[in-house]
Length: 68
Image (cartoon, rainbow, N blue to C red; front, side, top):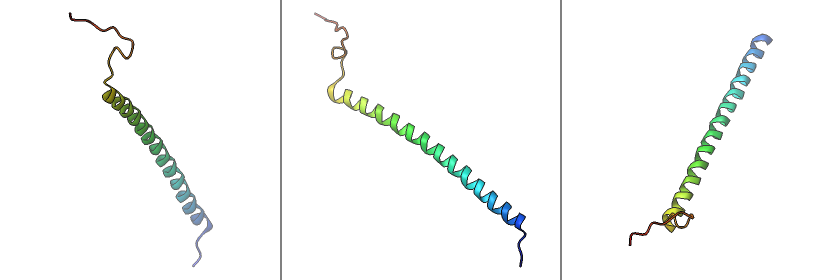
């Protein structure tokens, strides 16, 4: 059984293009997910530091009102 070269090249080319496009799509999704995870991590670190040290305006150079 002989397979025409044109059909074989078309099949291989189609498979290669699909693989390259899917690889690009997966990499783009991975970059987006990594960015989201980094942002969430930074926000979590900031919130946890403020929670443990009780971030007040006085620590940040703000004015403290006196109620005496």
